[in-house]
Length: 462
Image (cartoon, rainbow, N blue to C red; front, side, top):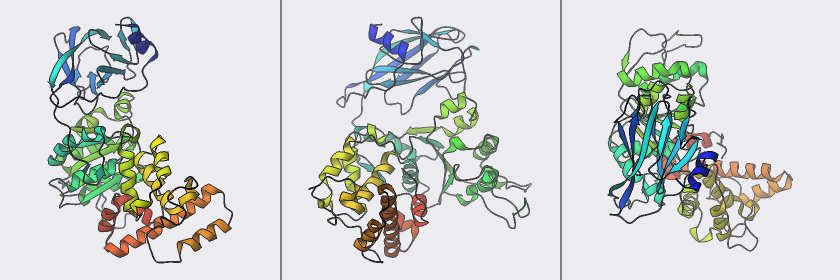
């Protein structure tokens, strides 16, 4: 182990190294982990760079390498391939992870190292891997768009998940498109003819969560004046997306686990069960592995949900996708492709996008509505008025802009008012053209729930 490795071990690595592209047919990167000492001596784990998410070692049934060592935490350490090396991350374990006498928080290994977790010793070896398949030639999956290597690596896995009926978890930062991916998987899967229902754990008060999930009988509690079906029954024959499942009340988690395992629910106030046929997709921006470790999320529920698991990459990791997405949003929102400001595109490509795809879409909408007022450089190809918003009923946009400017509001407040007006006119125009919310949302390229939020005048901030 060289000096660089010791530096990684001592100070902790903060960022994964990007994978180097290799030609199809070249050998992939594979690491083997062998237990050389401890109660499970002889056990092995192989890690392939095609694994869509980190593999875990610990006592939990959710771990790829499950150990009986009592000094090993339930989720002790996570392993994933990063470039040509193996990234190892200690998951806040009780007794720590050690390599060459150093405590490891986050480090990169090349092979040949010995790790110590509890009373168990692990040897890390790099091996020759199988030939890599050719990257997918897809540039989109339903409403999910992306031509970057990071996205094209995911498409084969997404296709297989869409063709199956297993529960799955979609992970990713806020705004990466988790709901859009879930809806695309539903629309291109065997349940496309059934309903797609979203239950948002962040939008439901804790005292109403059980009723919203499973329904209630008349008189079950104060205010329950009639029988009401929950989202499980509403999604019967289709797909239920449980959004931000990391926020689900801990007391409700065993009831959700029971519903998933038995395919039946019991309404609040009822003594009988109702059979349901629902595919479950969960989405979260939180680190569920860490939540399980901290006992904020049930291990058995996570294990039951994460039969399929996919992590959507942040926009900053999707090299080359910003121009593709920006042009798509510009045209989708009614802009003439030839008027998309070159300076704005350069500015967008230089941004870090903490709000990811949602934030980029909002930025495109602002530039389309405001032109230079949104910060486009003077002399840019798209002068104010060169790219007006889509035509809609109501007074001319110039009159509205003049009125907002005349109020002499602070720039952020004025901008928000213009964007809100643009969104309302845009939604109204699409509804008038397509007739139904479902068709209008599909034409807009955004999820139906977000379309409904905009329609009601409630914006998700990027």
